[in-house]
Length: 116
Image (cartoon, rainbow, N blue to C red; front, top):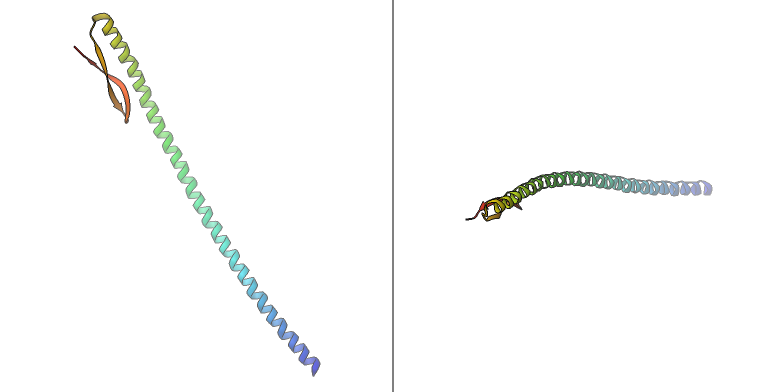
C-alpha cells in the first residue's frame, strides 16, 4: 500500500501544480488582455491627435492664405495710393495724408485723405 499512497500523493501534488499553472496562465492572459486594450486606447488617442493636428495645420494654412491675399491687396492699394499722392503733390501742390485702414485685423495704409 505504500506504493499506492506515494503515487496518490504524487498525483495530488501534480494536480496542485496544474492548478497553479492554470492560475498563472490566467493571470498572464489577463495581463496580455490589459496591455492590448491599453495599446488600442493609445492608438485611438494618437489617431485623434493626428487628426486634430492635420485639421489645425490646414486651418492655419487657410488663415495664412487669407492674410497673405489681404495684405497683398493692401500693398497693391498702398502702391496706388502712394502714386496718387505723389502725382497730386507734384501736379497741384495739394498735401495728401495717408491714414491707416484695417484689413483682417492688420494695419494697412490704403485709404488716402486729401488735406487742405
